[in-house]
Image 1 (cartoon, rainbow, N blue to C red):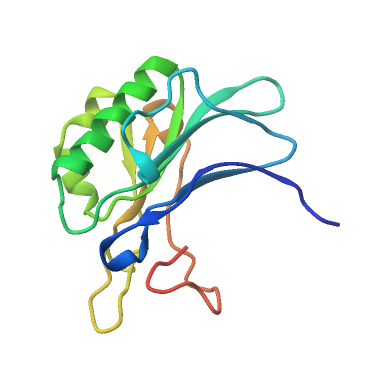
Image 2 (tube, one colour):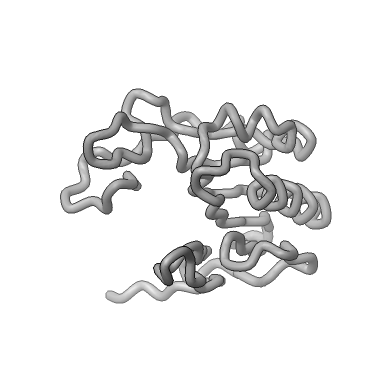
Length: 173
């Protein structure tokens, strides 16, 4: 039996040397609703997509997928992404889950103040295993979630899947 999926995405764009960068997506199973929110993120190009997910019974939440710029921490591009994420969540006015390759430690995003202002919790795996493990380097946690506080209270664990064979490298799912 073949599962059907719905998706919203932004394609990657050429980066330095012409290699692709960015490109983000939200995928949900066919039985869920998925549509663009009334207020989409502005000026984020291939680095953010937002969608309203509707589950059976009518519960709706804002889902976003984010790919922050590598190596700049809270530089101009990443500050803009955080500001647009906060604006998009505020305009939606409901529950939200933001998944991202933030390319920076959770403490840096938390320290920006945006999660607190948007009533979000950082939900990340421990640094013991990390989510990114480039060859020859120590694991780091740069892939994690920003979740509405009301939903974060329901999460009991967030951990990378270390049992998968042939997992993508350097990121762990």
